[in-house]
Image 1 (tube, one colour):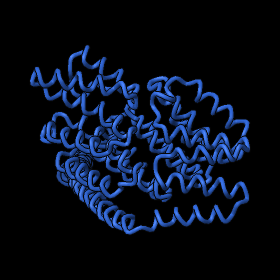
Image 2: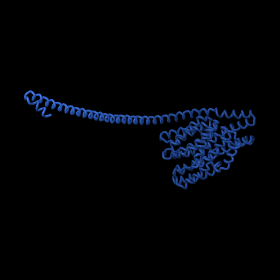
Image 3: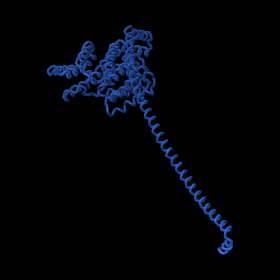
Image 4: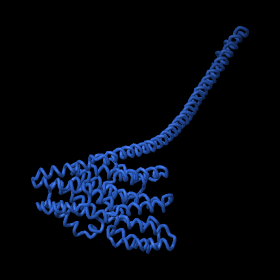
Length: 442
C-alpha cells in the first residue's frame, strides 16, 4: 500500500503540468499543438509531433520550437524505457535555455518533471544533483518558483523512501514558495501530495482535510478532479473501505484523463490494488510481473504472498526489497540528500537572516519614530503646561494688583477721614464758637 501511494505521488507530480501554460511564448497555433501533446504525454504519437516541431525549429532557427519538441519527447522515452534518449533530451534543453533567465518558468518545471522520472527508475542521486543545481540557480536569481520545485523534488524522494514526516515538511516548504511565486496551479497538487503522506502515516482525518483543500481549486484547474479521485481511492483502500474504493476505481476508469495522463506502472498498481480488494490474488500476482522496476515488483509481491499466507515466498520478496533499499547506491543517495538538505537549509537561513535584518531595521526606524513622537508630544505638553502656569500666575498677579489697589483706596479714604478729624480738633482749640457751630450744623 505504501508503494501504491508513493507511485501515486509520482503520478501527481508527473501530471502537474496538466494546466498547460505557454511558458515559451510561442505563437498560438504552435502552442495548441504542443498543449494537445501534453494532454496525452505518454502517447507514442507524441514522437511524431515532437519530430515535426523540432524540424520547424531547425528550418526557422527557433530554439523555442526545439525546446517544445524535446519536452514532448522525453516523457514518451521514459514510458518506453529509453532512458539514455530521455537524458539526452534534457541535456539539449539545458544547452538551449540554460542561460536564459527570462525562460526560467519553462526551465524549472521541465527539470522538475525530469527529476520525477529519475526517482521513479531509482536514480535518486541524479535527481538530487538536479535539484541542487536548480536550487542554486533559484537562490542566485531570487526565483521562488525554482525553490518550490526543489523542495518538491526532495519531498518526493523522501516519500519514495517512506520518510513521510520529512516528505510532508518539504512539501509544506514547497507550498510556501509556491504561494510566494504566485503559482496557484501547483498548490492543489502539493496539498494532495501531503494528503497521500498522511494516508501512509494512517492519519486519515488529516488526509481527508488536505484532499478537500485541494478540491477547492477544482473549478479553476480541472485536472485536480482526477488527482482527488486517485487520492480518495488510496484513502479508502488504506481504511479497508472496499465499497468506497470500488466506487473511486470505477470513477477513475470512466475518467478520460486517467489513461492519457498516467503512466503504465501507476495504472498497474491501481489494478493490483483492485484485484487484491476483490480477493483475486493470483491475478494480482501475475499483474505484478508487469511492473517496470525490481523494487516495485518486490514490494507488491511481498504484500500479495503475505495475503495468500505463503510466508516463505513473502520473506523472499521482502529480502529482495531490503537489498534494494540497503544497497551502497541508496547510501550514496542518502549522503547526497543530506548535503542538499543542508545547502537548502543554509540558503533558507541566509534568507531568514536577511529578512530578520530588514525587520530589525524597520523596528529600529519605528522605534525612532515612536521616540520622536513621544518627545514631540512631551514638548507640546510641557509648552501647554507652561502656558497654563503662566496664565495662572498672570491671574493671581492681577488678583494681587486689584487687592493692592483696593487696599490703597481704603487707606486713602482713611487718610482723608483722619485729616478731617484733625482739622476739627484744630478748630476747637482756636475758635470758642466752634462747638456751637458744630451743634448748629447737626
